[in-house]
Length: 511
Image (cartoon, rainbow, N blue to C red; front, side, top):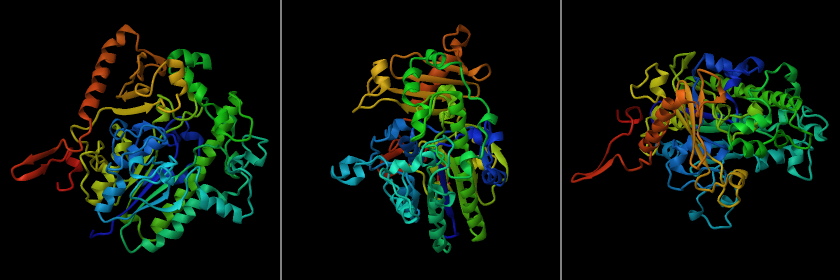
């Protein structure tokens, strides 16, 4: 490395894109992210390629679709020889520093059965140096910090009971805002990073909020009035939603409002829904505040113009839309995520309105530091889009996957729909107008026309949409065929030795 180049890669857990541009944007205060958008490039049609947390982060950090890396569930291992952002940045001379978590399920073939690394789905991805252990279920440094502040509990999860007694859904957390997990992680980052100011560095900073449990410290707990928030998107009643497709019955039964709060009464009423949405937005505002602190640090330390800053989310959140919660869904709210990228010399305020995917982020980082992008990575560098140039062969759609089975403990879907671990999966293809949802099991497809009622009406059975259904089905098949594992398929063994071609021109570091 010659010229100083830093990379700060921030992931906010479960933040919906419409908090920044969409239905919720006018109802949540995110001043630091909005200021960053004004100074950066924003991608409006950015989607996670797979849910939930572990698979999503596996795709982000490997640049691969789930159909290739196959870590398709929280707890399904990621192959140990898969190229990752950590392994490739090391080749570029960077020490990959992790502040937070990657939710990586390690390959059991390279660990002893009793090794703690294969006893949790929250392990740190190999190649990262964990600077502070901040995982949802294994946040021991933060717990010790809180104990030093006088907090004690019989069970760790009691820490997340609103008000300590669950008397109200929006009661404040028992800890102060300056002691929250978000504040603690940011403090750890700001305490450690000044020492690296004289060298190029790569840091991955991952915030757990606004992921549940939905409890926020004051003043964020009641910052927003639930009665002023927009109503959720719905077909009708819960019964109406489950009648849309067999998939939705188990989906609504799996994730309810009660799963998102600890120790407080949460039913399926509209009052509960809006109260929890308000807490969620409060947590988002808290994260925004601390991202502002991070940006200020970069500017005050003279590193702003040496740093590629990426801010995104691992996936979205249903947040009561279609009576659903969480991210085990096929609707856009579970996959549509914000993406903001600031790079030295970027066009401030530029908005990209072509489809981009979470697998594009690792190739973008590697391209920016001048490191070759492995052909095993399905994503494409976003650097041309950031400069206002759209490659002629850029994708016209985005693709996502969801695995809703379990090979060890059958899920509700498996029990109620008769699927098994091999066919409990779905592919989602979105173009400018339509969304096609196709199941591996013998279940009917879904087709949403965003030029009509969108996700409020399935038009797959309507004769006038038959050509669109056929076209998109062929497109999904072609997409899967084109993106099968290309680890070695662009290599050739010749009499002059092995030769390799770059899969995508913008990913070619030698170009």
